[in-house]
Length: 140
Length: 278
Image (cartoon, rainbow over all chains, first blue to last red; front, top):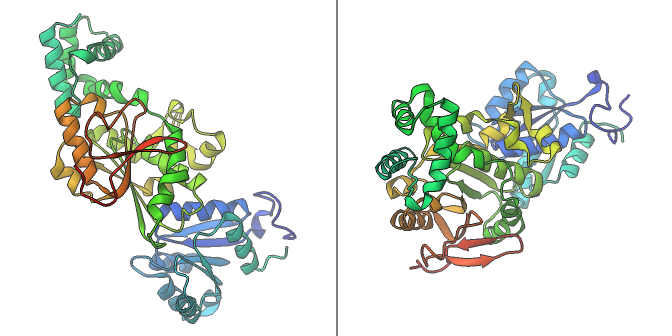
């Protein structure tokens, strides 16, 4: 059923679609990532910061988080740390960090917070779709 | 049709409402729109129409002001300037700006929002660094009625005609007969505010921008207000920042403060990077 993401949008049957939450304070960036991921067949949820993301996750879990670092209210790394301390399956949600910072200390900080992967902005539509696919465990 | 005195009263009225200055030289332009509105309201004479206008019967002020602006505006207007923005201007502005910093763009006057939203759409579609910088787009106008409509983000088919169909499909949702609403993410990515560009106390509070789009408004000002507006806009540019005017307008005729820059897609004006200018 999930044999390929190379098909067009809607190629997956509805119950098989993976859900991704894009957590970024910039509306344009959320739209850009949403579009890239929707085109690749994902279903998208959005949050403006870590706090909103936590609140939404408690209502409905997702298969992957795409998380910006610098955000008001609650930044991305604090959000991932907080998430990792939750009870049950929620704590294990894979998190892909997206950031403009590209130094080893930033990578380390993200890893320590519990990020599964780190991409440096700018991120092309194709790259984002590719890593989301990988982190969702979709066979290619 | 309209006596000189009536014309002057009408122009004074327009100036108070919009900041636009019309002189005898623009009389034909003004009269054409008055005739248009007289027909639409079935007014028997100019005197009748002007009475209706001043009492704002049926929201006539907004209709009248819109007759001067809305017909002329649509998405991706002067697309060559948008190409210039992503092809040349931003690349220059990014030099020495670390990733994550703000890129500030001002659309003034923005009318019902087509221009600032076009900038947002254009960047999303054509600028691969859209997630690497914090993009701030501000749309300003003197007229609160158009700002309200800009914030609502609902447009008729005519405004969308120049947009490629896949862009309309991606970023707009049908909202009634001949009504298309731009998606919330796009609405959130543009801020709107009321500004009169000849009032420096107002312009100053918005800080400095990397690029300003100020199209087809200076032509309606008299020489003195035009110079004041140009100087205000100069102050609103970061050193090295750019201003795009309408294709019939020339900054060199107004003030020597700016350098003219010719790029592949457009001619734009630049605040000199080093000095204070003028």
